[in-house]
Image (cartoon, rainbow, N blue to C red; front, side, top):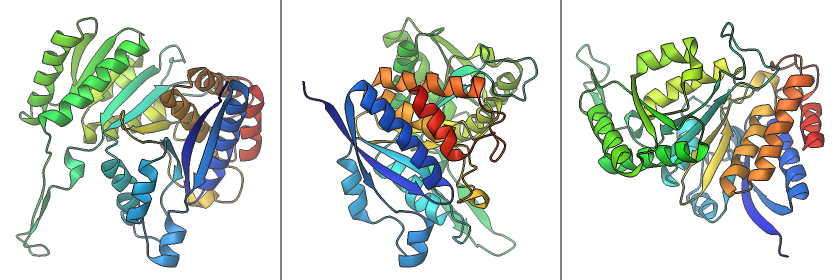
Length: 354
């Protein structure tokens, strides 16, 4: 029988990115060998060091190469000697936009043994997913300055959404809710009382699509401020939340801290018909670079998400179960340098359990 094989781009990036990616790959290889498929890696050195040495952020040829691969496994982007925005816009946002990764998928799940700042809540309460529209809205840069630098300066940044962008995101969220099969409830997070045009479009499309094509999925609507409140007070209410780009950016960070912080939060930038990219939510944490103390679990969880997306569900589940076992029985804390183990040792612990 032919082994299945996948071509994966690895972008370790900056700071502690290479350290967490190394452990992610270690665990991916353990899962691949156990579940009978092969992962072929192509490594790319895009990031701060390359930019400082060559002035190049992301060559056009790289985008074309990446389009031919099955997935992208990313470490972290951000370098203390590079002005903020250059790498983030030039690599992260450019890849999201040019590869049309129009879904940002963020599971918010509290693992056993992990502390949450939410009093009285445990793993049974915090287990939901945010589907964030990833290529439209305020982040497309529609706008500009007039009379910049004067006392009459005007700055405009417009939230622009087409029906097509809204609809494809909502359909993904409905399908995901159906497949997840938890409480089959999809909540739209918006602000229809103030953003009366954009979220009116979202809400109309939400109910039209839901009524016609997804009658089995329960639909709920929450304003974004109420969503933030309930994420803290009653996270157990949520199954899947769908929202626009900016609100999604904000509520997923709130979700991350309730699940134990940036050290465990993983995300996927998804193009359901193209190449998707998986990345830990935390940044490059330059102060910990090279010390072998950073928590690699977010990167390892990204590997699990990537395999899930590629259809290797058994291997993906095995990685998640291994992580849960390690958080429940081994780690003292998720903080860098406080885990009771080095970065490498945490990778070893998970790989052994896979």
